[in-house]
Image 1 (cartoon, rainbow, N blue to C red):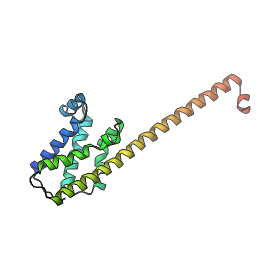
Image 2 (cartoon, rainbow, N blue to C red; image 1 turned 180 degrees about the vertical axis):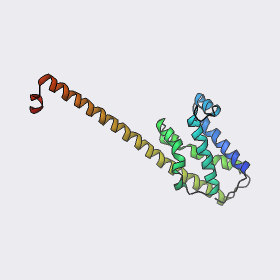
Image 3 (cartoon, rainbow, N blue to C red; image 1 turned 135 degrees about the vertical axis):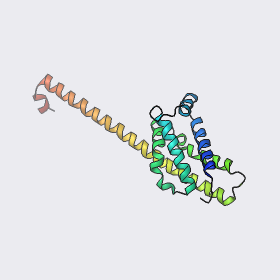
Image 4 (cartoon, rainbow, N blue to C red; image 1 turned 45 degrees about the horizontal axis):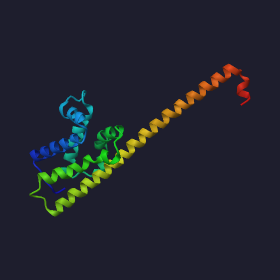
Length: 173
């Protein structure tokens, strides 16, 4: 990215982005995320801050978005577990574009706007891929739990059947 920012500008962008992401939650949750700073009392808020800060740095350093899956994962995973719709789960990425445009509204040229749009859109697609992988993993976990539960029920039924009808019940099946 050819856009250069001072550390104060980066901090302002990160903070404005964080505010927008937090405000996308219901009021009570947003207040909690914004006010509880202890990572143990508020692990979601702590992860959110770390992820957005790292993504802000990645944006200004021109990091390839394909390298950002591990950075995106903690925030996307929480949003997937919260069963947000895919669009809701990854929409936070789009706020970065708006915040950068507001911060640099006087100085962005057409080439920089195109680069900004391309990077944010690529990050959005990468975030969606992480979301899908997280949801797939959740579904696999659920299927495995159902299988284990089903096997346990079948084993108990077989034990009950053997107890009730004797060992001949197994041979008659």
